[in-house]
Image (cartoon, rainbow, N blue to C red; front, side):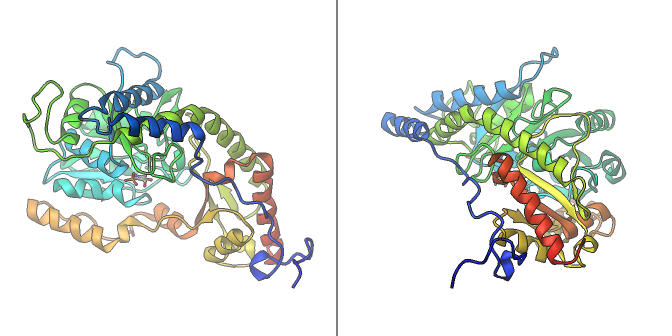
Length: 420
Ligand SMILES: Cc1ncc(COP(=O)(O)O)c(C=O)c1O
């Protein structure tokens, strides 16, 4: 059997030729300097941040904090605690701002489960608020509506690398007296009005899991200042304090420390990160512009306040009407067959049984009212979970041709399905 001819219009999923035969760049992208950085730590025997590996982990913490510090604003400089994962960062950070049994934490339902599950480990209850249709980030008005006297913290997710509306959320949390913990797991380097994410909230959490824009396989970080960050440091290091004794445990904490091997890998990755970030931004802007005229495809649009977008994902809404009525699952399968790294994305956390049961159990134990069940009050998130698609950031790392292949694949699918 020969290869399908290029221009017979048949989709790759139907046996036609792929739009993009050359794979998009792999992720992560190991480089010789990464190997050398990790090997140097291996050779040194300084593997643990609480012992001989401290200097390596501290060097990463300082570099990461410096990258998110932003303009001086009279507050103490931003600092960082490196941890084992984004999930660990969220649990530690929420503990550090005082989340405890009986409290509620407002979260979006359209996110990775750890955003919502972290507070369950502290005995608290996640309460879902709807998202903004333009960005899929937490909608400040919906947060205000979800508020109760038990609201102790709000956790906006900078979804896909796009900052949530930080000025509005900071103002709301200050006015009503709750902590703001940014879930910046997908957004290192993003900024609103020139001020980086990670520097707005009481604390902020990052992930360095393998798929992330900065990766060490696993890993995480908490950024913040002052007392909250000191408590986070203690909670991630089995309750020790920086100045205290090895066996002096001042509170009950976990071991959520990052290893020096991860820190060395991250420091090495950080050298290539600014260039990768620039390439993602250029590609995402080109892709947004080229998809603007395509019926049935509506890319998320960052608000004017977003001065840097991390583009961990490129999300868009899909309207089957413009594609001959074919469901989203068909679009994702057809894009993948064309060689485009597409995904249907999240399911709604507000429909997750395990999460709901744990939330109800925590509320019952604390004797507080149960949170709303289900997703009827979350129409925007429900639509996103049903109709949104994502492209992985690797689609943005192949320059203009990588972008143009996405557009060609979408057009080919639309033609084949009689969409236009
Ligand atoms: C929005 C969000 N929050 C939290 C996490 C959890 O991070 P990790 O996988 O490092 O535990 C992730 C990543 O997986 C994420 O995308």
